[in-house]
Image (cartoon, rainbow, N blue to C red):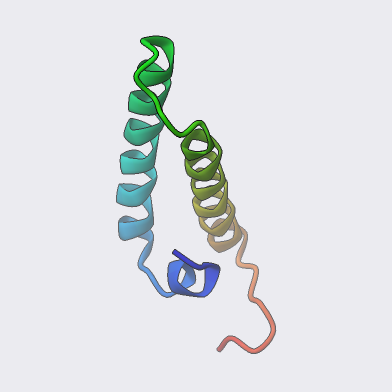
Length: 70
């Protein structure tokens, strides 16, 4: 999901996606420890998703508005 798409979501939806990504990260780490994870890059991908979501949630808390967005 791209940043522009994430910014169009409501805060409640962002929190739900954040929780889902945390669960996915837990599952990936569990699969990594049991040597069932095939693609290690999945962990990095999910961590970046979590960071994006947290950044946008925090920007909304601070009231930061990006140029070109009304």
